[in-house]
Image (cartoon, rainbow, N blue to C red):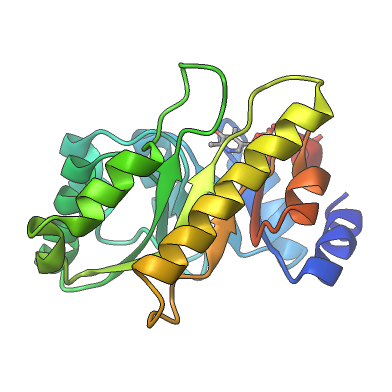
Length: 214
Ligand SMILES: *Cc1c(COP(=O)(O)O)cnc(C)c1O
């Protein structure tokens, strides 16, 4: 399955985040041995436990909702945090990155779905944060782009329009706040059920679990 998936991603030059939540060490090692190095988890404790047991050249991505008080547990090793959904969390990640003398790559999560259960900034909230004085003190983060999750629905037009919206937020932020940043280039969108639409709409990172480990 991974081979076919990588072929699908190739024309778009998009990265595969293998979502390994709930999967065993053996299942992860199986993908590792096929060359996969980027893995994503959505819970802090599981991420910490797996990181300790698995090879050190794995690039770990936190993709799920993250509580500020737990940032310190992953700050020493996490490569990417996709799910930055509040100003408070952004500052906490910056503080912990500084403490461990490293830079952490982050994505700003946007709420693009119809479902209220999904986390994320609205465009207005993000703009307010980016304009704030506190934001200027951020010095241990690489702000690499945006992340979003579409509504869980069979309606492909709706999913496509939500991905389009995320892409347009990305373009707007790029133009107005990150025009001089070479780092701000990622759009993390697309899961097992909707990654093809996400790629067509400009995804640079797909987060895929069930399809990959099936
Ligand atoms: C579980 C999860 C995924 C992967 O979902 P699949 O449908 O299994 O591919 C992607 N993103 C987030 C945030 C997740 O929690």
